[in-house]
Image 1 (cartoon, rainbow, N blue to C red):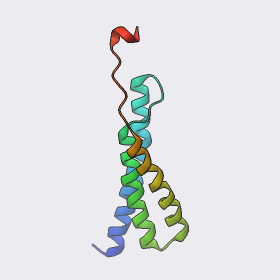
Image 2 (cartoon, rainbow, N blue to C red; image 1 turned 90 degrees about the vertical axis):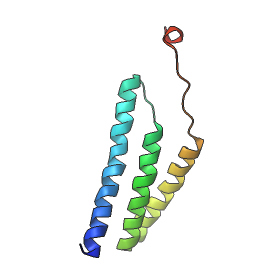
Image 3 (cartoon, helix red, strand yellow; image 1 turned 60 degrees about the vertical axis):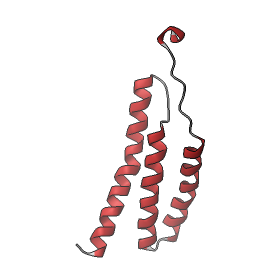
Length: 94
């Protein structure tokens, strides 16, 4: 496999992970019956964004690099701040 093919694969996997975070968020919100942002959303954002940053560096695209770098700070900070919500008992919910 050529170096270009490897990087194209990395870019494609990054895009799939990054787009997949929206499906995770949608599924979690549907299950909860309200808007929620689960830990997996921020994890996929950080992993997908990191891979896209690597791909942007390989492409030597400064605009793409700056965009991905700014997102990485947000994703990392949200992971650091994330705390699971306490479980609500059925009796307390009623």
